[in-house]
Image (cartoon, rainbow, N blue to C red; front, side, top):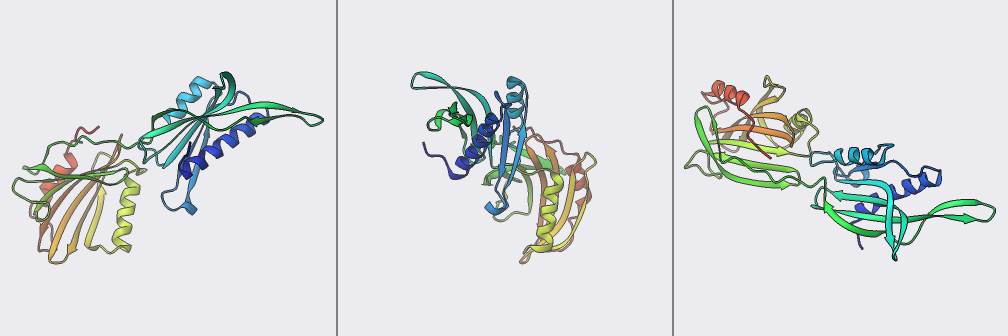
Length: 292
């Protein structure tokens, strides 16, 4: 069995911690969870370690319920005390479920262990044999597959689904255009995006404002406000050659992650469109599409 490097590292960490706990008399040990986030860079990775219990069933349920597609992590490992069959005999074992955000399958592993009695030095809990793969399951971090609505309407103008993609894991986007317009040459567009990895609308907006201030984007001006329901509205005009794009983005906290509803209007002027007020009103009042 060959595990990806970061998966193998995470498994080693959580098994070593569990065996150390067993050595200090914590048997059976309560289920616990490790969440690894190495998205920024390997040297900036973070590790969250949470213990549950002491009841095995309840603790395991809590650990499993703590991991989902919106969890800000790239890998997870859940460990609990149990048994494995080795060579036809049942053995005490550290059981591990480990998965990543970019693989739809998780590994179910078992590390047998036992107590070794040593002369003059007491007893010691040690691993017995190799790490075993006992099954596969769906990764709890596995990304969603959005079911996009076919059309959206803003300010009386119906837009139909024209393009959709997942540029990076966890980030899904769809573009809607009025009939007859093209994604490469449009004047009106509605955006619908889902970021299942973002910790919240505030963090998403903060990252966008950083791009405005530090990135290559040529932003004429921007305004930030609230949508009246807890969401955030960002309005800005972007220069792209001779084209000017007026954008109104509404960021909403959603069970799937952070949802973006946006309107884009292209022109040759640095000013907002004549129907700006009605577009913003519609955007703030727009019901969240039925995504899953």
